[in-house]
Length: 373
Image (cartoon, rainbow, N blue to C red; front, side, top):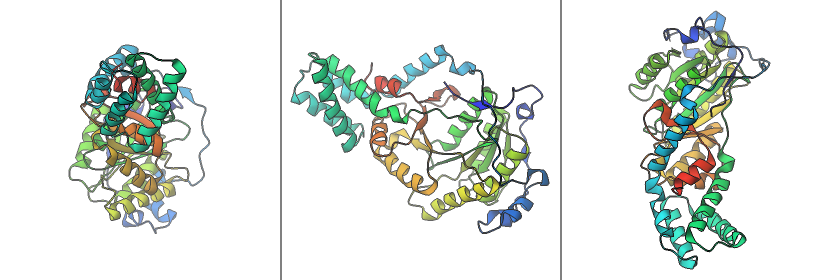
């Protein structure tokens, strides 16, 4: 399910499992300025947290036990919710196969359904061409056979997006998380933190979303629920907070540092530039970081999600996506568009508000849910 790695086995004495600690403010204006030297940044953090620019040798990776939320039964229940959530997206596709003959009319119906599901022109044409080839090769004679073949085509198209998030090659693994307001960014960070903690990884949160009111408080609530530490400084520069969090994560031997950045629209140029600055400042704290740059996108936004992927990738070089709010969306086909035009891995997808509703992405599961199989 999740594939997380760490250097040691967790114990009750591990400070990661103690009452969450809000680190007192200590970031200076120098740390907030991108032009400040690494030495100035080091002075802004506690002496013990002074960063090193020398990459730390990667430890041997040891697999962690799978948390209870990832058992086969839990996964099966979640798949049922995924199918229910994608019903609106798949309704047009399912209707096209009802009493249909394998002819041009069927392909036209499927083309319309895929476009309405926001699969995009390029992915739609690709899928239909691939489907025609599969139908001919399989010598299909019934519409339901074509339905299964379309699921196979979608699964193969989405397969390059299926990738497992791995932590442990670096200590800490620094993960930046971005997204527009309302996409579920902070909530997704909280859920991911819970999964990591359940897998035995020690996590440090950085509340660098100083743009949105109450974002810091929201992340602090998640820190309390998951019993992890948080770097939180009211009114501080987000770059300074991010720098201090990475430095503290190194000093405290954390497995993961999760940086919650401000929600922003790609059209907000000053905020997008700030996001790029955060990335550069994080690199000053650790020459190898950030190790992951994730974008949280709302599954209901359709083709706009593809535009967000392009813009954020230009700003921070995305390594992965988290797709939320797939429950009840009619635009789940956008993953096909992403796979065709901007194939950045989808690490997780979400279909609800509960912790267990954020799960690893699997191409075939998604394709079968999309086609109602």
